[in-house]
Image (cartoon, rainbow, N blue to C red; front, side, top):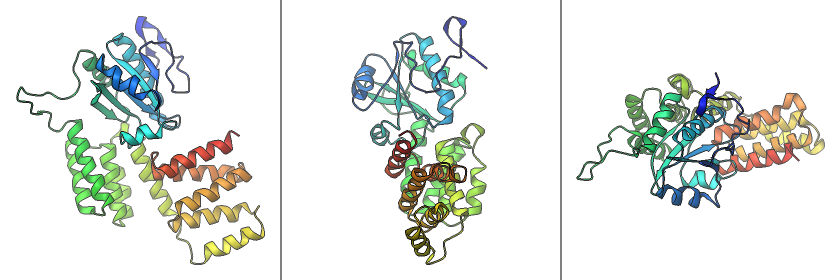
Length: 328
């Protein structure tokens, strides 16, 4: 279905690359160097919507053009800035972006509203129209109290509690926090992924797998969900026998071109908890013979990157190295 733009023209000429198409003065790409001017300063004049995306993110390819169409229709009442997080991981880290697509709305230099994951086009239009008409953010009473219970801010706070508990190894507390969000918002992808992670951390792989089925349909491709799926896929790999890595290293020392041995070594390293070592062996294998075994090394690297989550510095660095090999 073609999107219909202003004047009834179907918007079909979106470039595959998700960068701003350049045909609207209200939409631009931003980077670390220009972010403060493009977003923080500019949002003092007019609300600025920031779309965080990456070339490998499927849902971004749908959401980006739909957001652009809504911003063009607002005709200057809001601006839009696009940030490629592969090229600007520092911005993603500073704003604690956990998954993409993520969209923030800034007013007066502060984020006032936002959402994660792809949302229906009707909601995108409402989101933009609300900002354009001076809405956005929370309803404050005259006494300054916030009356926006259960809104995106509340969800974000509870998710943060869950993430902290999980990082501290408090599985029960984490599960409670994620469960609380799921009562308010059934199928919320980040909460579903968090709950699945909690079960996974507790060693209950089957329950983790079952939990992932609870995600709402439009959240199934969410980065957080894909990361847990990738983690499950890695758990299915058989555990290494002791001494196996030493035997494989000896094999490689005798014949560095033994690609199967290198691949097996990477799998054994990852199963033993050395994900970085595994990535290095797979990168070396891609460098030596990209086409080997139907690009098995490249495909496995993608699974590892997804399991780490895209803001993990090891994944950022690994993607950069892989791109360097593939496009050199």
